[in-house]
Image 1: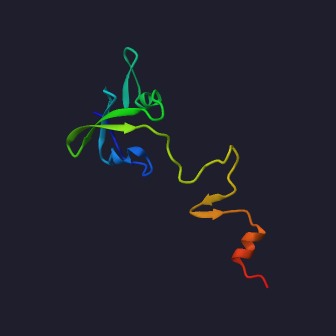
Image 2: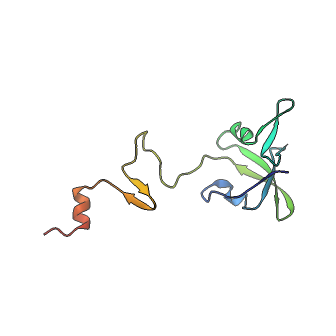
Image 3: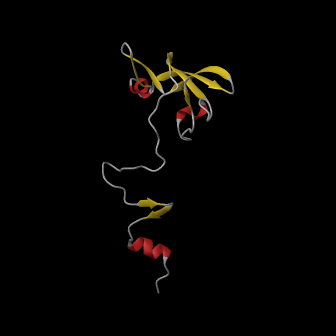
Length: 119
């Protein structure tokens, strides 16, 4: 019963609490099923991210996890995901494009002068 943790975002606050290969078996005392669902209403089930959506930034969640065959209760502060590269700037598109690790920027005179030797 529970869900397997396959990957942890390195910039996430839970990276110091959860580890790959661990199993989340409860969220705030609510048991998580093997299909990743929790009880909802009288006889229904819903994805356990529903419980996460009921929290606010900065709230603390208690997770029941199994790691290396041992049951642990840990606490995690819920914070929004931190993007290493901003995906928007004040609602507009960024002035660069990243494709396959290459960064494309608009060509400008200062860039040309800094990168090229012009006689």
